[in-house]
Length: 388
Image (cartoon, rainbow, N blue to C red; front, side):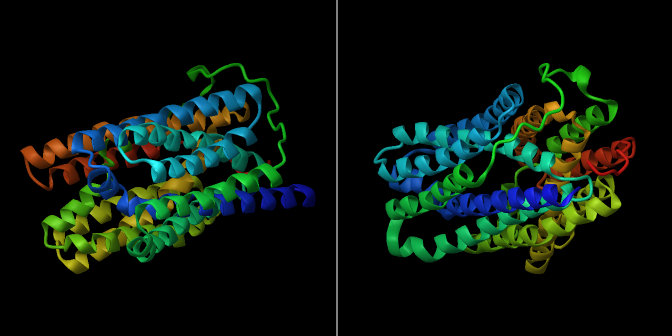
């Protein structure tokens, strides 16, 4: 890449990293108190809680796929990105002003619809990067995501006892407003596609991309929610009031190592780092099963953080590189939708296995599906490295 392109790449990545840090900070300030806000402050029952969160997850999946497709079709990214951050900010003001759970349903939908930013943003990162920097850039973005989450949770722990629900939600809106403003002012819209977008069709996927989608789906079926790991720790004697520590451990580890694993994938290849991420997930489950003690929980969640650090940025990088340029946002959005849709049956089946068979049963299934994913991964051929 020439100096001008390198300068543009660094500017875009730096801008997205700052905006992402700010948005996740605002989002995770309210994360630890969200269930209590619904059930204690707004007096919602668990059915309503399930409806609100389930609806939110569905909106995330749909909005990412829709925004990715539309972004490719009109060949614009910027409007989806700043609107996504703006939706998050407005929704938190809505939460703060709500006195019953009924308006929260609308604002939750708006909040999760903010994910329209993800696929266009990720496609932009892929577009401005070279084959030698793409993994590093996705890793940096994920590092800032996780770092924002860590700071947000810590601020919640400190500030919530002093300022309460309403003021905390209002405070949480500010970082996302700033993030939206930064995108509006500093991101320059550029048309990067070299071909005309002809619509989304599997016939445009090569065999490697199809296989990666299959691997992603199989792995997602066994990759149940981290809530199961937290409940597992609590069932084995880890105090409930200390569970946020475990959440902070894996989030902090992910924030430290995401950039490192992304950069490593630029040097050794995406497939090898993705393989390592699968191994980390298996190690996490095995450690938790074999050492259900405090030290085992800490080690298990460290491995879980390493899995997240290696999997999330490199997985997106791999998808982006195997996608036709004119379909990047569509495919990234579709990929996120598939992962989201598979998340429900993964956790639902894990719950059935947990309740009906044994507490280890979902762990065994996940390990088996991860091993299948590893075997299939060897069938993918990576594109040779070359400057974009």
